[in-house]
Length: 191
Image (cartoon, rainbow, N blue to C red):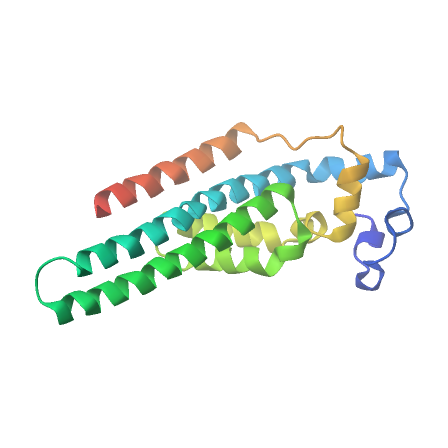
């Protein structure tokens, strides 16, 4: 690892001064981290699926209001509708955070590390098929390679080496597929 990427006092320098690497040095720095990039981007893709709640939340809230306007006891309907509207707004906010987090991780954007950590921690605590993925995501984010890949200077290294692309391995694709199958199976069982 290049120690120039680890100096926290040197993060806001102009791009060419901050990186100070030749294209060959940038390539040599990035090559061993491509697998880590691919894993983080895969996790970002799964986080992006949570963005479906941006649409589901308002739909739940509207259905709750429509149900409250229907027949039955007005007080009971109003109480249930209020709770469902609040839950719908919560889901909308969660979906918006997933949208931002998924897009950010997909681009390896270093600006939202706290958001990524919060989403992975939430996954790790859900006791669902997302738990192992949340733990793995926390490891990816907070390992030394994750700290390097999600640093502002590494973003500049990526910009200097556009010929290099993070490619998902077969194991990466299989793990993500199995997690998605387990997640959808769990959701189908709940409905």
